[in-house]
Image 1 (spheres, helix red, strand yellow):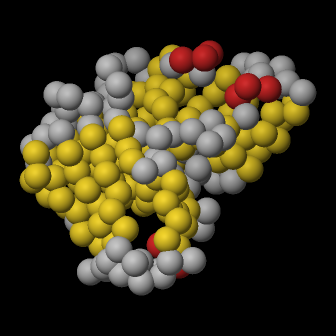
Image 2 (spheres, chains in turn green, orange):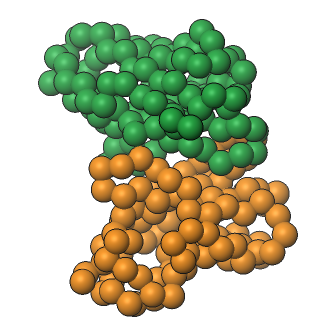
Length: 113
Length: 111
């Protein structure tokens, strides 16, 4: 089991650029979550999917953020345009059932200058 | 709305000291509770979880947590900490398919 795989591990970009973060959940897991971690706000749930369908995106900060899950093995989180305040570590996590524990990826550290 | 409170932001202990990290949640119904650990530069890993049954839950690396429903608490404990326990610890509550995390407690163990 390779675990949840996120790419890239680090991303440095300039303000105004588009950023795409990628996540491959553990095979067989039917729920996928995107979290953002910052010193100021801790871990924030951005959005989660059940069976590839977005269930709750109330944590997405604004329209600049969008997430997709075109199939059970892949999800993207896109920021367009990016801003310095988007700098954070973005974690993807998946779980096998609605009550199971989350398995986290290694995260993507995003720096927007 | 549910919330999770971790009142200890940073705890510093010497090796072999006993540890207790507080976690309180605000929802009054049935909840599932978790503790996760994040070692420096790494992702979150599950320490232990409570779904039902024995309110004293044992996890990995000698950690345990006690669910006290009347106090809405799920405190994490370890009788004797090690330098390798230096990490950030997150309490989380699962409700309505979502996992809500506390703000975390940074634990520093001094050799």
